[in-house]
Image 1: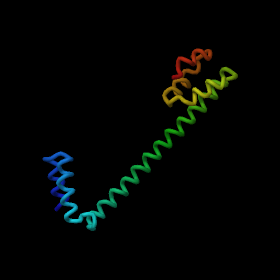
Image 2: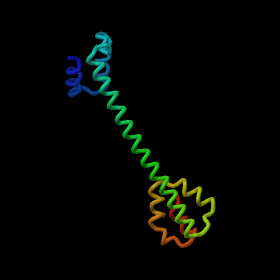
Image 3: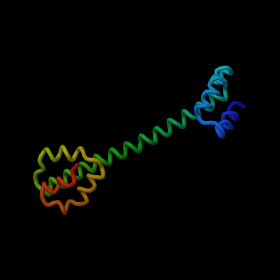
Image 4: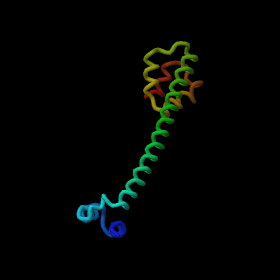
Length: 121
């Protein structure tokens, strides 16, 4: 009943008001000890872990992709200019995926290192 009351209260009142009202009610009823509350809490915990795991996987893929773009950009530029100064290697490693992709896509238009400056941030 408490859950239903809180849901319906959400249609009329903002979150802060609901928080004030139901915090006091929860303390009076010791709601956190109820089996229903524990069940809902555990479901939320499982869902949160699953979402966190998915986000971690996506971030890992993006980081892996960016590292491979760094490697490709350095390899192509080294091949084109025969020797890529360390300063440029360091600056390329600092770039985001968008910049790295721009350098790779335009490798044939970059004719000397000064033109590479136009792409690096």
